[in-house]
Image (cartoon, rainbow, N blue to C red; front, side, top):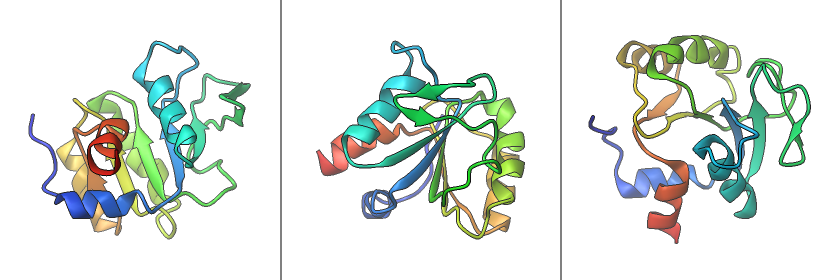
Length: 140
C-alpha cells in the first residue's frame, strides 16, 4: 500500500496543530492505539480519546463515544480502525468539518471513497502513515 502524496514539509506542518482526536484509542498498553497517543501527549499534544467502548478515562483523559460528542476543538482526527470502518469515521468527522483540518489514517489503513468524501468537505487526508513515526522522523 502506498501512502498519500504529501511532502515532508506538508506533513511537518500538520504537527503545528495541537488538538488530536484519536478514534479507536485503546486502554491496552501493547497496542499502537495506546502507545502512539501516549507519545503524542508526551510531546505536547492535546489527545482526545474517541471510542464508544471506553466509558472511563484513558491516559487521564475523558473518552467520548463519537467525534461529534467531543466538546473541544479538533484539528486532526487520528484513526486506528480498519479500512472498511473509515467511511463511518469520515461521516462523523464531517459534522465538525469547520474545525477538523486533517484525517490521519494509520499504517495499513486506507479507504479511497472515504478520502474523496473528506476532501470534498475540505478536510485533508493522510494515510498509511504513523503519527509517532513521522513525528520522530521529521521532528525527532
